[in-house]
Amino acid sequence: MFDLIIVGGGAAGFYAAIQVAELAPDLDIAIFERGKTVLSKVKVSGGGRCNVTHGEFVPKDLTANYPRGEKELLGPFHKYAPMDVMAFFEERGVPLKIENDGRVFPKSDSSQTIIDCFVGEANRSGVKILKNSSVKDINKISEGWQITTMNKHHQCKKLLLATGSNPKIWKLLDNIGHHIVPPVPSLFTFNIKDKRIKDIQGLSTYASVEVLPKKIFHTDKKSLNLKSKVVENTFLYAEGPVLITHWGLSGPAILKLSAWGANILHDYDYSFRIKVNWLPEYSTKSMEAYLKELKGIEAKKTVMRTNVTELPKRLWKRLVEAATITPEERWGDITRGQLELLAGQLTASSFKVEGKSTFKEEFVTAGGVDLKEINFKTFESKLHPNLYFAGEIINVDAITGGFNFQNAWTGAYIAAQAIVS
Image 1 (spheres, rainbow, N blue to C red):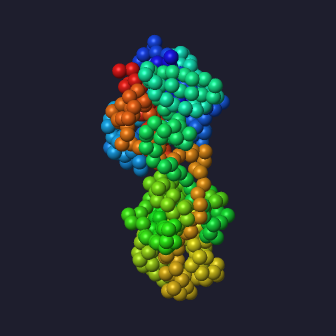
Image 2 (cartoon, rainbow, N blue to C red):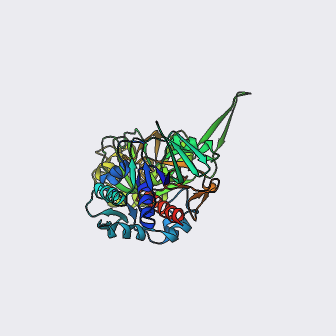
């Protein structure tokens, strides 16, 4: 019988195993990983550089980056925060750096550095790593837990689940009474086909983006009456860099919207409209006033070639075209209607979103074990003693920037403390 089985050979699983092994070297610990390799998500995170955490050291401010889990993580972040994570890696010979946007990476700029650290520490501590060990069943026994894999039963006194967004494990937890909040995608980009952004991929500019509310239709199958309602309180707004891509729009502002609006946009079936203000320091009215002044000052210059904003030139030209202004038209020649159209394109461009794309390889979901069923002082199940959780298996997710990993590290650390106490 193992003292502790950790299901999930990812970030949270390894972090917890190392913490427990250091606190209690005599315990028999095993990590069960369903795949052929461990730490696969760590490998691809941060574009292969591994964004281990974020340089936000105030717990209250740190929690503001979690659409789900903001309230619950405040106490845990007072116990274990980004500074503690950074110390963990530095002490083990992995120097880190904080970049200008606050993201923390290994100085090597390679996720392999983090993987080597984890695997090395686990091996040194005597943690058993069992690959190709997909868990088929979880059952309570008198001494603790029984874990069933493809061809064997394993017993343990304590069990920690760190399986991320694994529907099979969620199903097993549902079987033993845990409520699972239905998972929906988070951290995704918006698919948009629009001539204003076609073939100008790679351009990035600071903008504000707003998701416009829409009607959701509900069908009563018994009476076949079609009912509709406008979803209330769905105001989703973000500012930040917006990146034009082959498939639509991405960048920090879009990713924030996808995280905070994960459930709403799922209800919309990823078909909705957004409004983009490419120059958020202006309103449409103030932009109209500004353009009217320019009409007099730059009367002899062509509008297309006179970019009077800080927008990339190619985007400026597309928005001028969308305002029905030809390449030859001068400022002095454009009509009041064209001027108003241009002000609208610059400050209130409407785009139709039809679908989503995963942000790089970093697939994140909202959903998981209901937070009401977890003791956040220990990350232990309130329903079953000696059952613990860490990472994305619970209904916590964050915006991009190292915050999802921080949830994994914090949960793993606090669970490890409770396991050996």
